[in-house]
Amino acid sequence: MGYREPRISRARRAARRIMFYSHDTFGLGHLRRSRALATAITADDEKCSSLILTGSPVAGRFAFPPRVDHIRLPGVTKLPDGSYASKTLAMGIDDTTSLRAGLIQSAVERFDPDLLIVDKEPTGFRGELLPTLEYVRMRGRTRAVLGLRDVLDEPEALSAEWDRKGALTAMEKYYDEIWVYGVQDVYDPTEGLNVNEATRARMYWTGYLRRSVTDVVETPDSPYILVTAGGGGDGAAMVSLVLDAYEADPTLGPNAVLIYGPFLSAEVREGFDARVAKLGGRVTALGFDSRIEGLFEGAEGVICMGGYNTFCEVLSFDKPAVIVPRTKPRLEQWIRASRAEQLGLVRMLDETRDGMTPQSMIGAIRALKDQPSPSQAGADGYLDGLDVVVERARALMRWEAHA
Image (cartoon, rainbow, N blue to C red; front, top):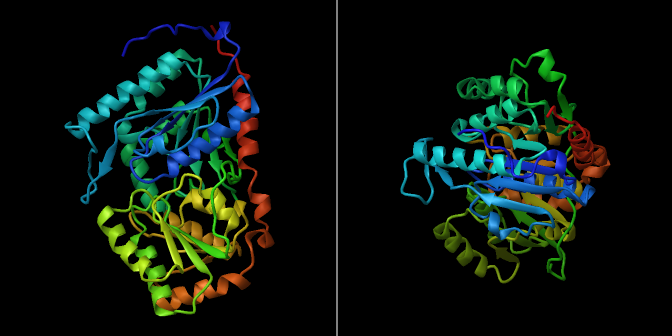
């Protein structure tokens, strides 16, 4: 796509602009992380605005704060054999990727951001971001940041994946800084990657991203535990195990508030709803609530999957938690939960060690009331992420490119 001069040159405008790229082929994590970052950075500067490019099909169900907006990219879905297909369009995946790539570059050209923050994938979905990264590099007017969560995958699998995608080369070539949304002493997501010294010098460990209640949500009057499957697309086994526990032990308490997540299939949810109805109010279930922070705040404890955002919420609201991590298609959640358990932040329910049985879940739920909270293991010292991100964004946007 050819170069077009922006309608409003940077020299003539006072407001700063930030663009976030969130590929979102599965789940909620990338969008929720980008939304949290955009909210914090724009709140710090009343003249700053943020635009999120996202492939999430549920982006429209979230409320965005003032001066934060989003553009929905055509969705894609992962097939059982590991390949991808367009989620809604009658187009092949190559054409869908090309369409997304064109929309991304057009948005960057017209929005002309001071800062481009890319979530997790250095080259984007199937390399769709590379033309835009080359355009940004050629222009020299936009700083580019790669944001990585605390854990990506086991080192051997990650190295093979990044070699296949050319991700390490892209990270070294196109990004001014790399922000790791975690703590180096907890885990280094680049372990196993042959990152050169110059690139490592541009890496910043921000700490985890603290969450807070932004919208009021109705919570039960009586004590409850929160059970959350994250996006829900891979949470059916955990949800079923929790229901098994309440069915097997009529005295089990406290009651549970269960959040299925928006990607749990309708057929599976129908079966779960029938089971919930037979529990006489001891478990109540919701499909999805974009204001889940309020439910975290009111809970006595948490049973959850091991996704990044959920982990940040467990730490932020200082809740005793049992993490039931997935182990496929990647070991990210298991690595995070295992390391957090070693540090005393949470307890993990591990299939090999503990067994995924109603009895193991009953024991985990009963033990929550006596389980130490994350703050007792020093979690407060891990939650500086948003403050550091705001500081780094300020520093990068003070940079002035050559005209």
